[in-house]
Image (cartoon, rainbow, N blue to C red; front, side):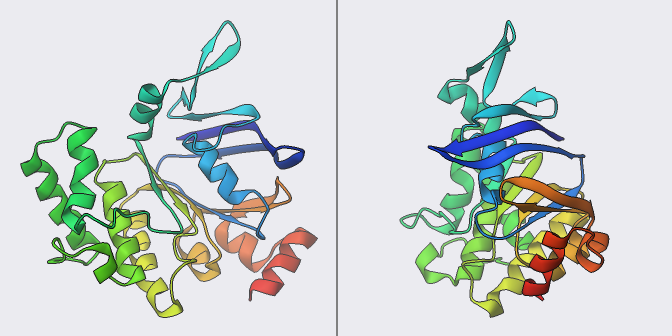
Length: 250
């Protein structure tokens, strides 16, 4: 589903990603762990070209993301082509990024109608199904500010799913939430994982990663330090940097 080869990213003189190689298979749940500043979120944003790579390439389902290749050179796509690619990649951010002036139903139905050309009837029916999935039935008419943080994040997940993505990216989806609201968002993510959604998740929730992820990738200072089956990496890490990080997290 996802193949990253030699991905580098610099902000000025600071190299944040130093040659990331990564493969994610269809239906796999992969969690990225690591200290702040290790490049996890930057890599995630490169997967749907919210950040331009400085070098390397990322393909989703065999198609280069953000670029056309001509005569061995990469040429950046125009915004229309990029938007078309992003239809298949859902993204959930730390901050919910809902449209505050629109109710829940409009937040969820707008993109499928505008970008996928769905009829209002189809989009609304799908939105209601998704609200059931995220356990927010009956909240169609609520505005974001009338909802708790956990409820807003669940609406954001429903909004991403409304585009029928093949891949879901989660960038620390629980880090802005009060502790008692974290569980309700993770429960929705567990449900998605059990239904076979391909997911790449940046998270600090070790118990979630251990239980739900097929693989865990530990990053530090812009490189992949250790990767493997989730329980193996979390319970018996091999690398000293991974061990030190996990000791601090427990």
